[in-house]
Length: 347
Image (cartoon, rainbow, N blue to C red):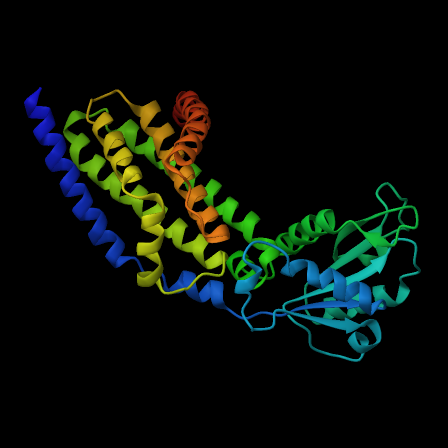
């Protein structure tokens, strides 16, 4: 079918030109400004060595050598905190499960009156019965588990997971800023970005695929679809680089990120576009490929930012096909939910 081949080639070239134009117009300043916004988290405890140790957990993670000199945390004794009137963006009060925490509760109430978000971390053995905590409300709480019979040695790996999850849930600091300043957040923030972008691209591809059942709408929608998906992938890659402490210069970092995955993913996206040229067919595979291509690209970018090593072609292919299975399941779920939405709308 020579006609289709020639048309597919010109359509792909036009799509690539549109992608280049769109990426040149991406305004990344709000993203960079959010990632580079300074912040301070105050760690407060009557046990200063414990507070310093807990705060140090946030500096453990991939690329710790890229930690900027800008201070992101401070450690205060409980007495010093009670004498202050201003704190950072978030106050983390650290105490032990088995302690009379009346003074800590007093500080939390002061923080509430000052409109300073507070997080109370209780240190104790897993399964230990804590003292009643209702006097801490409305402060958020988290448990930092210990190991050993004495119950005074933190389980650092688990405590890091518990602490970072609680700080992110507080929503006091932008996730990109947390990751850029504090390495312990980098892997989770990056992987969340990958997951969210892959899902968004899959949903977008499925929604435009439904519109392409009309043959006359197929060509322009496919070109626009390819541009939007690639733009989302580029923004995702840039956000991962920021989260991993890389340079914030968009023009400088993007060629490096593009080289990490090479041209293979561009051609896969073109293949996805050509699949969509058949009216009424290809919605499921195009959705799965949109998810898998985005997910594998994000994985390659993250690993390069974390280790400086590029995925081999085999490793990249493995990541792609592993994500493709997930993409197929997502596409099937999206297609199954479509009639239900139509029935609800009709009702």
